[in-house]
Image (cartoon, rainbow, N blue to C red):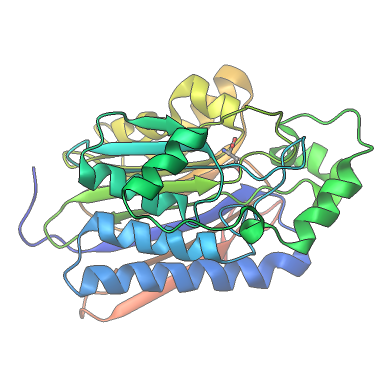
Length: 327
Ligand code: ASP
């Protein structure tokens, strides 16, 4: 169900974990740039899917984040990427463990538009589909940055590593800035009241070979349904998968306000399996919301104000603060 004169809105995230203080500016700036670029697409009459893909592709190209360029290496020292996108008519696609595709989110989008029958493609088959759909390929080392090579080497002696470590504030203190995970995502509502969501990641740091998390999976890493709204998630993928976090948040909009639905979904994940992470959420009316139970979450959003002008807010939550601090 679409509305012909909806108020467009877009929110992006750059991960929910313990962001080191010397990376706060880069996270703020990267999220702000992506939110503005995505919103400009909506203002130009583009669709919600156009907007989230542009925003997420920018975040993939920004080496600050664990998606596309800047992604973490897995336990074997490889970069393998996961991404997915969904339109509010439930058209959706995901790619997992893919190498050599510059922007995995553009591949997910191309699959949606080409009506590729499979919802999820993995590994070499996903790369072959990118070549078939003329999505830009890249050399395997295009995504590698020095920060991640150094982190991989620093982590290599760590025996007690757990996939959940980056998201737990207590563990993050122990692993310090090495416990990084800045998956990216965006959700949008366009002028016609249509929704879309997209998420992209290098996965949890030091993930074992073959491990795929929530990010490329509809219902877990993202969800969009024009009747209710859209969500993109980040955090401990194994927990997010167990509670279908994105679908849970969107379905919460049947009963709750946007903010309460976001918080209830995160609280339910923690109650059921101790999972930590964050999500962004958008309903048919009103501003976007976000919630997280990690130390920080990088978020930026843009909605028109009452006078029709564009206003943007960028938020990074500080540890120990119950209220978000606007930077
Ligand atoms: N959810 C991602 C994964 O588990 C990681 C993240 O969001 O930071 O692969």
